[in-house]
Length: 383
Ligand SMILES: *Cc1c(COP(=O)(O)O)cnc(C)c1O
Image (cartoon, rainbow, N blue to C red):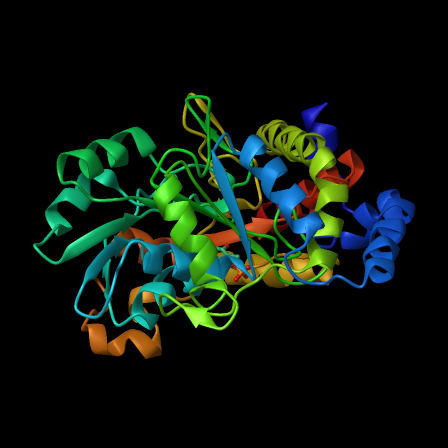
């Protein structure tokens, strides 16, 4: 059987995008249309009943007491830091291997992103290195649950507790992910989510959500998102304008009940890749995602590591297979962060991940035949 497979030459008849939003939309078209119409007829567009209902649903889904909608995942991070009083001169420990907003939210407030390298196999911040990075100016720790798998929260919460440091979870890619049966966003002091359309729960535009178990912090967040104002034109604190709108909330309320099945389909697709890569005898060529024990990885992205990545991308592109590099430049080497004084070699694991990581299609509606095609095309590259 395996000899027959090795001689198999993939025919170039399939198109496999990295993500196919149309496939999801086709299933929900009518529900979404009526939700959007409902909002249009209400003519209530900002922070209304749709947002409130979504906040309640999201608090339940993430196993937290309070959920506060805002304009984006980036704003969720910024508001979380503001709610904790992070300001100029402070330091926040975070990962150099993430989307830009993780570090920019810290720098935006005049605070310093203090980077700590990642664990090479999970791409997440290495707790063993966090403690050494703590200084008298450290105000918080901001781990990212990258690609849909939680950072090692037991270790991080332990460090946070011993040093009285709050933890902000950047859970933008990890809604529904679990770590020892606790949901992403519920383990630290504050959890931040994004509804950017490529996330597992994606809106029809930008949107974000902040969750917390702390009633005082929740109260502050509700003020901060509306310019620090509890009653119109009276401002208790300096906030920003970062409100979730009713159209987004209505769309997200339609989608939330499907999230579990979509994430389960992504997990199933990840298991299928594992089987297919093993059958194709590629596991020594392609490093597959490492899933820690006792976690639920929801595979917002399925990221493999290959040393000859750029040639492989070209090969996949010629066969109409969509891929993406998350992320080609680690945060400590971004031009705008040159003033922080980091240089190449500071975080070898993050730098290697930036050279080798490659996201393959894993979206819920992806078909088994498409996955077989992806693996066949990768095999034809190596054999
Ligand atoms: C998407 C993302 C964000 C930002 O979310 P937006 O809604 O796009 O602003 C922040 N952090 C991570 C890790 C993300 O993936």
